[in-house]
Length: 169
Image (cartoon, rainbow, N blue to C red; front, side, top):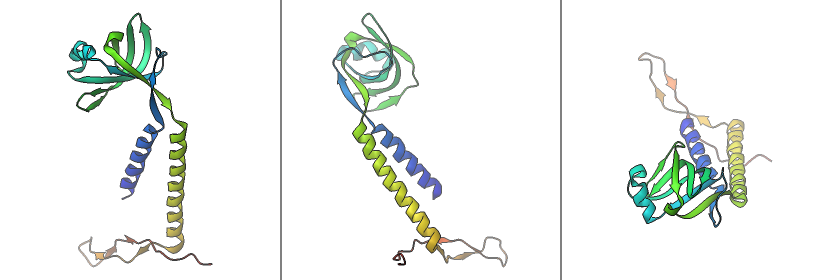
């Protein structure tokens, strides 16, 4: 149960961390070092099919350089037209500008981050309150005896029961 709780918390934190960013359209050429999503044109799908397979919709990665009419990026993920995505480990790819339709830049979103931090703080406070209440009022009781030794010894496996009682005044 404890491992499941840790997994749930980790999954929530990772998904929420993605919410701290949003993507905004770029109307100018991106700067080196920025994480950019490149929407691929029909011409680009044909030209890049040998590298990415048919149906490439977008490529995301960090721009490492701009050379003439080519963007050089370290690819972090790609998305296909059918909605499937694939994670990449930073392979360097050259994207001709003629293959790129719209570009979007990943940008830190202060409002989303503040909202997430507030929710996380409240959730952590609630968890701490439950643990304190569990410690103060006890939460383990009874259980069914199970013979784990094959002999006369019985081992009680506690059942977690959170008491719902008013706090003493």
